[in-house]
Amino acid sequence: MSPERLSDEDARILALESERIAGHTCKVLVLDPPAGGPPLDLARLRAHVSARLDAAPRLRQRLAPAALGLAGPAWVDDPDFDVARHVRRVPTRGQIDEAGLRAIVAGLMCERLDRAHPLWTLDLVAGLDGGGAALVWKLHHCLADGTASLRLGAAVLWDAAPATAEPPDPEPPVAAGRPDAAAGALRLLARLPGPLVRERRREPGPSPLDRPLGTGRAIAVATAPLAGLERVGHAQPGHATVNDVILALVAGGLRAWMERHGAAPHELRVKVPVSLHARDAHPDALANRDSYICVALPLDEADPVRRLRAINAATAECKRHHDAETLDALSGELGHAPGPLARFAARVTASPRLFALCVSNVPGPAEDRFVAGARVARMLSLAEIGEHHALRVTALSYAGTVAFGLCADPAAVEDPGAVAAGIEREAARLLARV
Image 1: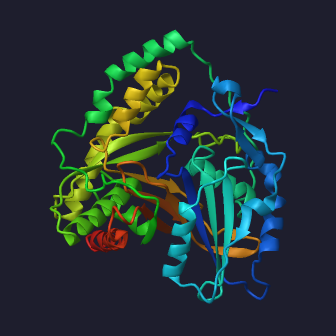
Image 2: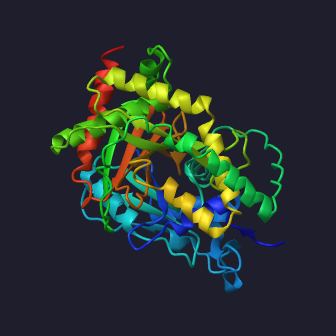
Image 3: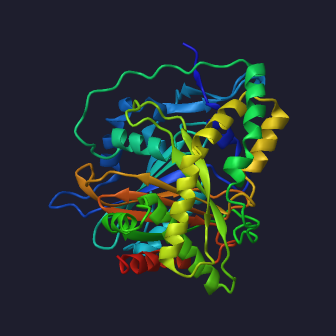
């Protein structure tokens, strides 16, 4: 059997790495103190993960380049796989408070994953204030997107919901020939102005996040009650979704940050990933299946309810025009298009004039999960920033709470904690209006 090669989308994600940009995502799980039993230690954690790895064979595989570079890299079994290389303990001293944990996570976000081995690490941080511990699980984005990483977590890390019957394997896609694909890409490029320029009715100001990047990272966190966000959305005339409300909270946080730093708030556009994973996808379906829409955040609007309603109208228009599906089709066609055309489209879709930052939202487990008997009290998701985009926001819902994970270059985005604080204030303001 020939090895499975990276999909075109995953190969493009891998190619985004640079001296300043690492390509991974991260899940942070804060565990309750043990109730009467021993605390989670490194030996138990390694045994816990090792016993489940058969359910996720990709986690034992590394990337192997093709001979002479004639094809993309492929996933192959790592003959030197050692769980001890991937499941580690962070050396710490004394009790660790919230700020200390954020600093540890920021440091781990700066570390590169070793391409000679499977592209993931799981770090145990013991000694949190109150007796708990944290797990920092880092995976390369070419291995799994947000939805797929949660599927992996359910397989190898936390106790999952009751098992259901496995769905049949999906049918393999039919590959088009190169000439037909190139012609299709040209036809789709003709449709590009609709999805990508739909929000350019007003020329935006320059992105305050388009700054030269370094290798440092800073982490900030905000939380909001999921039921409250649902209530806010249902109270709007257009029945705004939770994702609309999340975008409105981020808009409030960005407006507060810009005001704090003496910048006049103006419209900023955000890239919003849209998962195209099938709800009944097989657990082994790990390739990235995201498209996206671009939405204007009206930061120049002072009223939080009017901001939310404007965002709701914008996302509804994107859905009516099927923007995410159109862009997904374009991405697939460009995987077989001539190099210059593919590179041109990549530059267009990554331009800071198209979007200032990426804001993703992934629904996590609705009920409590447990790792080796310890309850997961909180779950947070983080993702790496990109060139010309010095801040990234990732929302993850877990057990009734939406956690916003902010990752930034601290040299380019001063005080990302002000954005997080603004998100929480915006949530309080909206909840007070319903």
